[in-house]
Image (cartoon, rainbow, N blue to C red):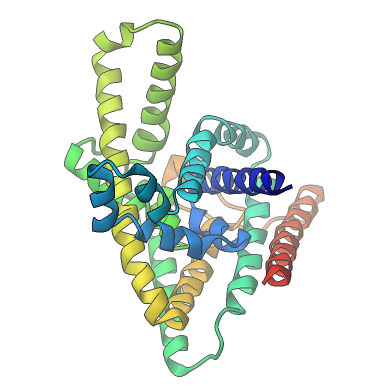
Length: 319
């Protein structure tokens, strides 16, 4: 029975990682938002914080079991595995759904964000003046990011490393979409489309015994870019998680207030009725006509809201 529970728990964590990775790829949606909605956000932050000097000492001295236990290895490995799986599976499905049913997909996510606002609001014990100021500050940052104009594409490796550090904020700071930040930095297509596809094609070719891509200068350059981007993302994860875990321990109410502000400020980015932000880099929102498509979109918004509310009640019943 214990093994069955462990298997169920591991599968659940893996699915959480897949959902988080899928959300990370969508401009305007934050993987950290999924972590809060499902209920593993704090464990994620504090587990990442454990990748510290002590963990590195265990690693480099060959004490792998102690390193694994110190960093909550099972949880982190399954989350990261889920994120990797999502980039080669569910993100492809999501691309298909966004192409065919764009309004419905955005409506679902819009509802999920509203539901997360409800869920996170309950973590704030009192609306003191300090909490209100921080909340308002978070909203301003979220709105400010959403109306910025995008830069041009830049494949300089130092800039790509910086993109990795900054874009991973979406996993740590719910409401700040890493993918949308990459659009603003001009590198969304380069890093999350072209380079990921280059890696996917290379892995597939190697499995089939074809190593001809080694002579493809453009492919090798893309693989170099995604490697540097991954290194920047890992650096950002460790640094940001250490900073955030400190503030969550010392000033949890202020942290939740600013995160709530980020999420509220990001609602404009996720508004379902808008143009294609990936192509234009800008958002042109509009009020939809009252027709069948609009009513179905509203239904998906309600589904998103109630999904988070139900998950919130389930999490509360476990505690």
